[in-house]
Image 1: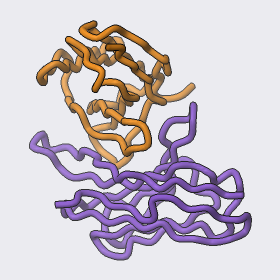
Image 2 (image 1 turned 120 degrees about the vertical axis):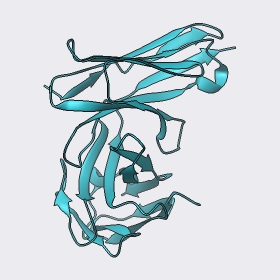
Image 3 (image 1 turned 60 degrees about the vertical axis):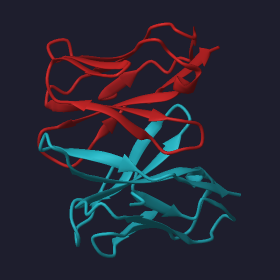
Image 4 (image 1 turned 135 degrees about the vertical axis):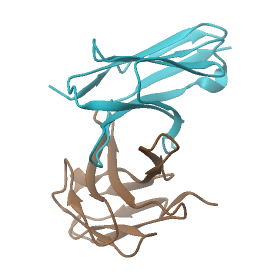
Length: 115
Length: 111
């Protein structure tokens, strides 16, 4: 049981390049999320998917697109990377605990540097 | 005003001290409260969750929620150097899928 996995762990891009960050979970969770974490800003929600086939914008969606490929996988795409997208990106999934409320579990993160 | 406010610290304490970490929030719809621990260059790890006012204890950790004051706390007893990390509070409403995070408090426990 690997939990939430992310690839790659680290990536360097030049301005204008594109890339896709991959995320997969093996906990049979319905909801998945993409966050970015910047110093002093905390975790900011980029996009989330409440269930397979649905996606919604979060707080900072500009410059990103997402795909919920199936129940396990949720990818984040940067079409034309900008230096402002330099950040650490976390994928998370959430499922129901015994309390009957969803709880989030995070992946190890992808460190992205855009030059 | 942010929905969740958390003092960023940094907080530095000697080993064995009691640590108090706090968050305030403005949205009275928040009913579900979580604390995460994040070690350097790692993802956040769920420590505790609770949905009721009062205290919830798990080993050396106690989560406290005061809904009337919109204030939550995490207490760490007998702090250890391995507790050195950033602690994030998070909360959500009873319905909906979004979670709201504090910016995190950096804690260092000195041996």
